[in-house]
Length: 114
Length: 110
Image (cartoon, rainbow over all chains, first blue to last red; front, side, top):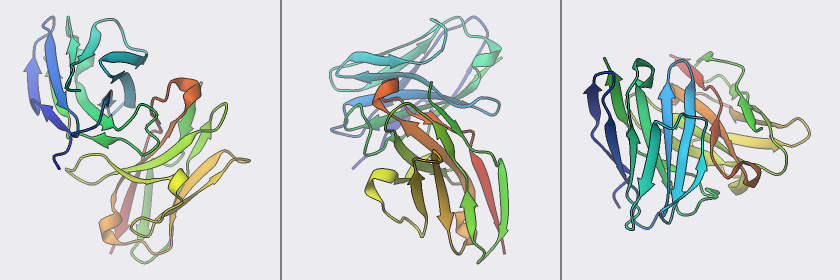
């Protein structure tokens, strides 16, 4: 079955713009989480959605937001982009929020802010 | 707050030698612990989880609640084990989000 699909793979934006990233989870997975990966900070949790509801949120400013649709697909949005937002954004899905069976990650969207 | 510490950023071993990646955690309660691996140019993938007590690709990990550790071990490293390894924790006390350690890069030399 298809894995977690993230689009686009690469993005280049300028400061002040906004960006929307998309994630399609594995079929049947209802929990979707987002992570930011940078060389300096490593992997940091952004937020998690389950059944269209945000269940948990990391320590990121309000410029970072997300949503989940009824088909479990998720989008995250970053407004007023800053240079420091340049990172690999990873989406992960799991059967249920607890994630006891582990999360399956997508390949990520590499965002470069110039 | 939950925290995962991987003290070694880089581990370099020769092929056939044992390898042990250290992971220490802090958490109030009973955590779910995982090891994830990222091979070059591949996506992050689950290697093993403590609740299944499994051995994957020759790797094992034992949860030591007394020492709050979840070290990853392999008795005979192979060149294809060269990758980035992340220890991760989740649990009800922190909303079940995954918290990752900083990662350990393993380089297996021929």
